[in-house]
Length: 327
Ligand code: ADP
Ligand code: NA
Image 1 (cartoon, rainbow, N blue to C red):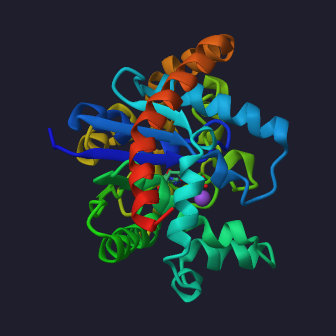
Image 2: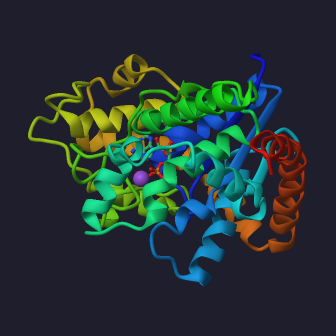
């Protein structure tokens, strides 16, 4: 077990998909056993950098809370909370924003990509990485599980810790990246792209609440290619390799073991094997999410308790920050 404090956040975008589960959440669950202090935040303030329907947002927050619990986040071992309920995040974000230059933010990938898509992005979208830095530093976090796509944002958090410490005296540890597995789940319909909730094709993404029938159908429709043998070669055969990745991850075996089980099967028969592995793993998660969705009182209680514990950790840090800044 390491020492230090882990922080990570996830946007409340409804129920997570298989990529989120295998690329992030499975690791979040494991980290609960590896670090003495772990915080996971449903980062709803980040969500409103894009237009949101308020009722949909509220329901997405509850769905994300249910999903995290069902995946194995344990409120006894992890502080699970809703970002917007701890106003210290916004306050620290302002202070850190005043230590950041405009050009430092302009080249970050999220802004470059999303502002182009939207033609003109909001100030919130532009300064989103500063809020992310505040999320992390507010708890003096030392380790941050991130995907590769977030590495540059974490570097901003590291820079801001250093800049603050230089100007106002040592306060923040420099948070380190815990690169979650390089395991990337690809779109079932276009294996050159990653599986993503923003994919408009419904058949491309498996969510963790998909029924066994949905899962079977989506995997049956998954793009492979004209050779029916099962091989693992992500460069030249990304479709079938994606199925092998998913199979291995869901059955908790190595790629070699998955290929061994695939020997003698054509891709059609192999898809059934993959389907079974996915269903077996997701069934209990789906059932638990359904149970929790019907127990809103419990969900709210968990979030309120998590928020309370997060505030207890955040308040003294922000008090110290304010004092150093001269407020
Ligand atoms: P999306 O791409 O669907 O918008 P997010 O960007 O919200 O997902 O990602 C949340 C977390 O899930 C991140 O840690 C990210 O690295 C991980 N993740 C998202 N999609 C995948 C994927 N296809 N494979 C592996 N990990 C993924
Ligand atoms: Na994304």
